[in-house]
Image (tube, rainbow, N blue to C red; front, side):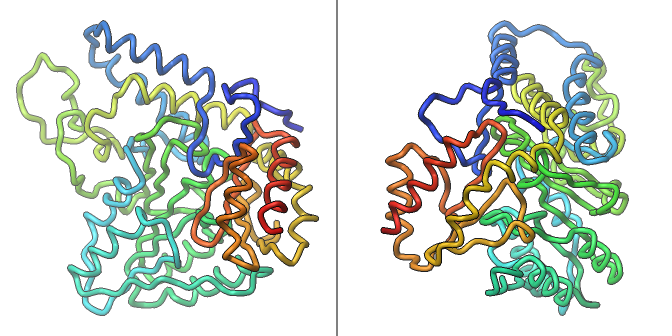
Length: 383
């Protein structure tokens, strides 16, 4: 079983950081790489065409290895919204068609489709969360499948719900989307790096992921993985570095051909030698730990919460309905949420409030002492 990995980070003693779903702490190794990148900026050196893309190619290989994909399928992006825009830019909806998503989906997954539906006269279907907490995942998946019909042009869902870790059956949803000919777009941000997400098995047309959460990377870098239906689509950003041969700056001719595969969708200035090596290190470390080991670690760590959640003052989806590394705790008396958040802050417990959930997101650097401080704060806040 995987042991505690806190020594690989620089978290201060006394801080109970249970908030990786918001932003991950950086690995010590990633800090070193980031500082080295800054030093390269202090004293820049000229890079040849092969050197210019070397680190970006290493990142593609690292994230492809995590998702059972191919490096040629990987585009380097700055954000989830940038990735979603690849699909939204290439889709035109007919009047009467619909886009299916889920209630309280992360805004960066939805805004592009709100605009697309508004411009094209289509409908955005936001599938409501079931009220039955004990079966919330099972029932919500059924509702999503029922919402997809012959007029569905796009299905855009997350692997798990960002507020409380509720699971979605991506294989079943993807199969249904393909049956009706809908584009299948998945946000894997809250899974990739901590839980299995198999691109080849799920077969999304587009998978997007921010790098600063479970991939342990810095802000403003992530990736998109492209399926065959979008691989030859039109980029919405035109710049020199996604054009074939443009890295050889001794030439002055404009290039019409794009780089191979998903590289045409790379963000401009993607070869950032500060952030790219840092994200590569995070992806490699996540792969080394293994998603199964991470899930086992978080599940074992949070077992003491099970007794607390039997208290009628707390409501949470059972382990069978959610991911192990995100737990959304709701209060029977929602008016006590501010008091709970204050009690946790006083104990140096860092979590997030997301909607009506108090979201706890542990990782392999957390210890039983962190969970003790969490349970103490939760109980103090509902008194």
